[in-house]
Amino acid sequence: MLRECRQMTPALSWGLPDLTPQEPIHAFPNFSYQVMNYTGKGFVCIGDAHRFTDPIFAYGIFFGIQEGEFAVDVIARLLSGEIRTNGNPFADFEKLCDQGNDVVEDVIGVLWEFPLAFQRIFTCAIACPRWIFYPE
Ligand SMILES: Cc1cc2nc3c(=O)[nH]c(=O)nc-3n(C[C@H](O)[C@H](O)[C@H](O)COP(=O)(O)OP(=O)(O)OC[C@H]3O[C@@H](n4cnc5c(N)ncnc54)[C@H](O)[C@@H]3O)c2cc1C
Image (cartoon, rainbow, N blue to C red; front, side):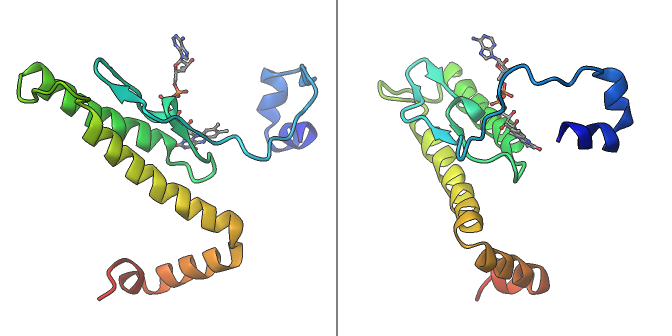
């Protein structure tokens, strides 16, 4: 991989002349994680702070920003007094974030568990987007 990096990107050789691994290279079959109860009175986690599923689909930045926007909305309503509760003011936020992450995890799970079915679904989605996304 290091040799290919050098060949594909000559500038890498100039910027990083020594590509000697600093530790043995490990393979991780799965590095996803999920934290439960990541909000409460006076605290809220967003993005990778509570869940990471997969880097390949490249949605993590979007989720982090989107969850940040949702959290800001709750915090603003808390500070303005619009939300008054003795419970967890972020309970709905947590539920919404979990729903979004669950959908992504299911989609990615189908890719890894049933790659041929996944390919078929997305080939159909491209050919007939209305059929997949707006079934009647
Ligand atoms: C290999 C890989 C490839 C990826 N590719 C993509 C991609 O192409 N597109 C995409 O959208 N997403 C991608 N992701 C996912 C994306 O990087 C993350 O989902 C996203 O960066 C999460 O943002 P975050 O702000 O929650 O966390 P982070 O980006 O991890 O930010 C947390 C920050 O907090 C700092 N920090 C940690 N502890 C402390 C502390 N105690 N005090 C102060 N600071 C602290 C960290 O240094 C870090 O800067 C990839 C992830 C990986 C691992």
